[in-house]
Structure formats: C-alpha cells, structure tokens
Length: 393
Image (tube, rainbow, N blue to C red; front, side, top):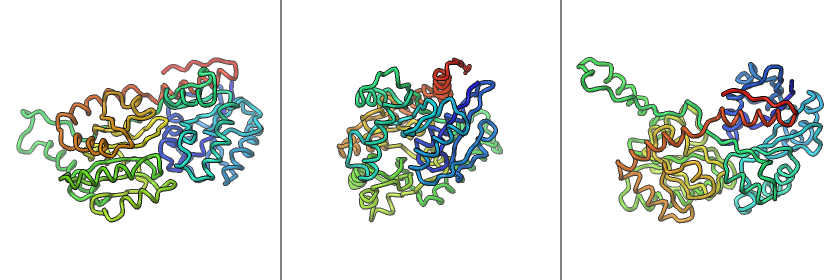
C-alpha cells in the first residue's frame, strides 16, 4: 500500500503542453490495489473528471509561492504521503520523497525571452528542484541530456516520459466510398455534405473566409518565434501565395512583438486565442499544412497533433523537434525567414509531398503513447517506496 500525492495545479489553466501532459498522464494512470492517490487541484479546475480514480483535494492558497512552498508541505504531512509528484518546483521542506517533472530548461539558454521576474524565479528554483528531487521526469531525450549536462546530474536520475496525442486527435475527413457502392440516393453524398457544412461552420466561427489556411499552435510568447513566421508568410504572399495564416494560442507573456507583426494584416492573419480541444482538432483537419517555428521545445506536442489529424508539417530543426517529427516533416532553420518561407511554399504547392508526409505522419505518431509514459511514472513512485509495482499495459 502506498499514499501518493500529485500536484495538479496546471489542470484547467489552459497552459498548453504542460496541462496536456498532466491531463493525459492522469487519464492513463493505473492505480495499484490498495494504493491511494491524492490529486491536488485549484478550485477552478473541473474535478469531476478525476473523482472516480483519485482523492481530489482543492488547494486553499491562491498565490503560487504559498501553494508550492507552504501548502504542499502541509499536504504531505496531513495525508501522510509516501511520495509527492510536482511540476518544475519542489517544496523546501519535504516530509517525503519528491519527484518532479521538468519539461525543459529553456531559461538556461535564452534569458531575453522571459520577463525579468520569471527568469529570476526559474533560475533560482528549477536548478534547486533538479538537484534536490528524488527523481526527475522529462519529455524527450534532448531534454534529459540538457538537464543532466547543465546541472551535472547522473542520467539515471532522469526518466523520459514522452508526450503523445490522445485518440481524439485524428483525421475527420470521411473515408472515400467505393465507386460501385454509390447510387443516386446513397448516403455518401450526405456524409460529404455534412462534412462540408461542418467546415463552413468552423470557417464562419473563426472568420477564416474561403481561402486555404496555414496553421500554427502555441501560446503567444517569444520562443514560439511567431514574428519570423508572420514575416515569412507575408513574403510568400507578396510572391503570389494565396492563403491565410491562423495562429491558435492564448496570450502568455512578452507577446507585443507578435501583435505588431500581425497588425494591419487582419484579412490574412487570424489570431484565435485559446480554443477548445474539439475546435482545435477541426482546425488541424481543415488546415492545408502546419508550420511550427519554435526554436526551443522540451517536446512539442502540436506537430504531433497535426500529424495525427492528417496534416503535413514543417518544423524548426532545433532541440527536441527532430526527435518528435522524425522523417515525417520538413525542417528549417528557425532563425532564417527564407527557409521558413520555402517550407510554406513546398507544402502549399506540392500535392505529392503533402500526401507522402501525411502517411509518414500517421506512422510517426504511433510511436508515442501516454499509457507507456504513465506506467513509467507510476513504477517510479513505487521504486522510492520500496515495493515495486509492475502494472500491465
């Protein structure tokens, strides 16, 4: 028997990959008989999704510093935890072993893409967590190597728990009907009409017009490299390209340069803000291609989601992205706008290339699995308690 605590404060905060990681890990988690798992969440989170599997406890502290460094310590004591799992930060006082998920350490390499306050906070607290935690989870081999080398840690202290995509992210376009099965009154035409009407509704909802569109997804912040993508797109348009650029993501921090780059291009550049998972899947499906210019990622879920939805991708040849995309996408130097533009041109003009990448994309996404990552995490909990547990998946 084991008592496990999981800090789920990111649930419901629309934080992109960080929230997706926890939501899917928790969904796939298989709890051993006799174990009790306490999930700590904010009062605003939708706790009904977790109540059948976990003991859901809502945080009382609203300020992050009090929640991370005071309340979590108290919760360890109150619920007599054997292990606590946090994200990025760990309490200074730890009544039980603490394991931590660190998605990346971008701040160690790019100091000018965070606010001064955020840079200082990460610089002080994340290295502390990496060195003092009983174990670290991260989301790619690139991130593992980066954390180990930067903080001079034994690689055995770090486990890779890859991100993945859930089953909702899939190709929505109806399967082509066999020609000999279609009659004048066959339902195939109804399916095609329904599909057409659904896309028309989607285009109306987000003001997409009738043009084909290029999609990118990510919170608006400097490392997503959106100003360069916007300039590359505008250059492509001036040379005869005819499409819109759709940018999905909420405003995070230091996004003024993005807004300035998009200013005055309202007809061609659409910023949707945060969208629901249902609408995101529909946008992936309706897009002609997906471009991801981020120059630093611990993993990079959006390209994988796009591939799962049957949309060809081009990504930055940087950090973990080649590990994620493999041979299923085009690559460009994220700091070279001409290379970004060339990738747009290839994906928008070359039908055979798009078809080839779509097929490769389906194969690539199948290599990543939330259940496998969740299993690694749960086994690690038990390793520190001293009673190995080997769930079957």
